Length: 345
Ligand code: RIB
Image (cartoon, rainbow, N blue to C red; front, side, top):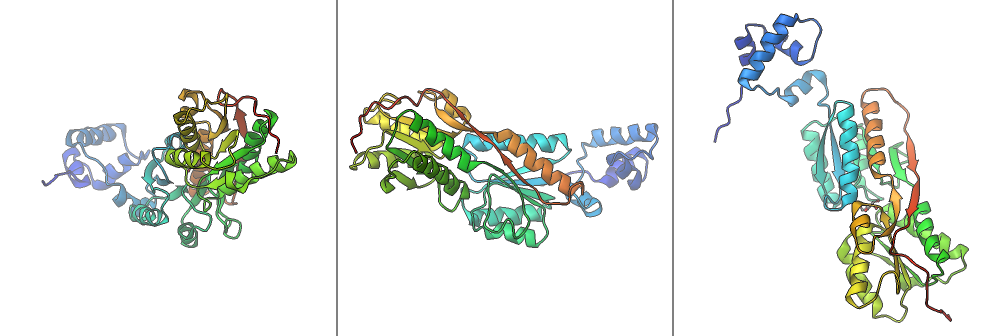
């Protein structure tokens, strides 16, 4: 099927003006009379003309478009984060193109190439692994980038803009909450170790455990991925082992939901038998049964801030690099309660 579309020449012909005049109207230039403006707008409407953004980018050197890379579109954390990015784009006259990488650095590289071919002005990246080469390549090519919720090993060396949250603090408040409820054997389920937020959340867990002088059981500290299935399968495996925890700290809400599902499937009650704390405070935390105690991240705000920062950079309104760290807070719901197990160990 051939799709026919009108060009700027057709609009100029129909309106009886020059191409330059049509271009001025499209760019909201003030040097056009109201009468001419209306003639051009009428022609645009009649022809259903859509300007070619890439052609105009050649002269304006901008497409007013940013690329947003996210690792998992099905995790509600990323719907909210994308919402913040899109809101900021909307407020500042930009558009967003979202690409989902499935936690793969190959897919990340492929999408970066694609978006560069489409001439996006810059990137908000939430997919970077700690030793990510794709980000370094972008920086070396002087492409504007803000890392959102992800840090990389060389961020200081390359002066990269970062919008993060306090992951050590988050791991600490979650674990400390369980300790205050009398739990001693606390499992810690984390996502992939290549993603720095997990290492940081583990640091927070360790800090709270050490401060309370609690024994850390290596078999209870497990790295995996950020999916519900991981929480589910790993919990069932753990329950067959010798050391059974009385509480779990999960590095995101999806893992926590998997843990709860596994516990219920073998007859445990949450929280009467075993407590569970999640991380993110996504919509899932409110609607699950029992409602999930979790660490709140200011997700939308982080997305908004990162995008605003990128756009300021693109407009030349900000030249120095920034590192913004958002606080975290604990939201106590119904998946945690006092430990009733008397532990003699
Ligand atoms: O990518 C998965 C996780 O990383 C999210 O659930 C959120 O915790 C983020 O930091």
